[in-house]
Image (cartoon, rainbow, N blue to C red; front, top):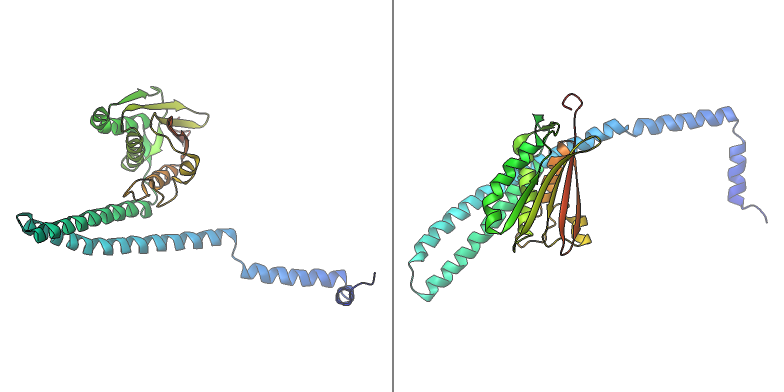
Length: 275
């Protein structure tokens, strides 16, 4: 079969180059491409700068939205007081509408607060601390609520657990979110097991509940921003918890089965000087 004309012509042109000329040509092209393309480090720096700028803008926008929301809330509260003693059907309808606006304002304020916590997380001031101490404080905080829900909190904390680098207030915020989610999954009672243990490279915390559990789709998407299965939920609680844990150099995994419960496992590395 005859070779296509275009391919024959291309072959003649290429054959006209000596190997040295071809190498020089390739070298010039490669140099031009290298000049035009940023290296990996420069690209990473640009992406980081863009992310930081976007986070700052988003945070500023959230603050700007909170200011008029505060004004709306204040005026709705005053209007509700004026209508509280009204006896007419018109006053009662107006009060119902005011209360609806108040609920939506509260929802927006909570969403903005969750968003600010998610967007403003930066480099943490990590210091040596005890994971056992952090989870103990959080569990103590929820003891009263657990009793009301008829949930038994069981603690198996490794007494010789090595220290890790942490920022106490921030890490506790992540743990609060996980424990809160576990209790909400057991509205009719159950057990919440908190267990710390040693791993090959550090320490781990298991939070195991006997709640309603999750299907595979929910488990896969639960750490995605703004994904929520709760009415009125912001969908930022678990993504923020994951972001905090990763900022501590750790990682979080989840295993769940519908009707059986959920297990969160958080692992942190142990710095050699603290081990």
